[in-house]
Image (cartoon, rainbow, N blue to C red; front, side, top):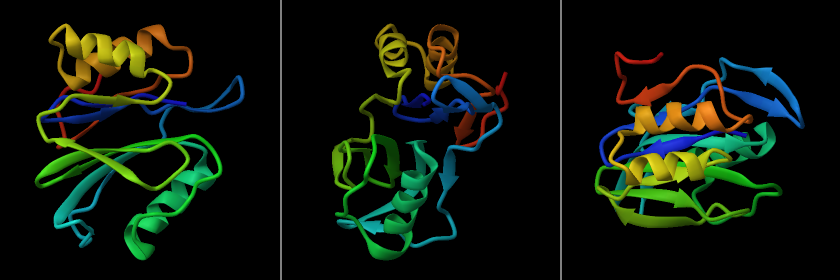
Amino acid sequence: MTVLVWDGKTLASDSRTTAGDDIVSDIAPKIYCLKDQEVDYMGDKIEAIAIAGRCSDSDRLLSFILTEGFGGELEHRTNAILVGKKYVYSLEEKTTWLIRYNKSHKVAEGSGCVWALSALRLGLDSVSAAKHAVKNCTSCGGKISTWPKSKDKK
């Protein structure tokens, strides 16, 4: 699976994809900038989304968000963090329903979320929290990607 982290300022993710116990890739993009898309959710413009889960459900979730709107069902466990101009959202499991938080709220999703949340609670930023999850969760790995873009991706 993966780790997705929001610290109130920066969205971070790892880049590992797996199929069962096999590592498929360590270079998969998981953060999508929606600057060219007009995605409105209850009066809030969604700027970026990070998605973790099966590719079929990730593609279906992006389709819902970009074309059909929100409110459908997903077959498998899919995690997502969406960053809007006003709020940050996490995805309710197996649905496309969103849970809204104040934009300053710290959020972590994916199989590495327990390590990332503990790092956030200790005062680390999202990049450091994602790196901490990569060190401790075998399902997480690869490089760290950020939105807005960061110079530190090691």
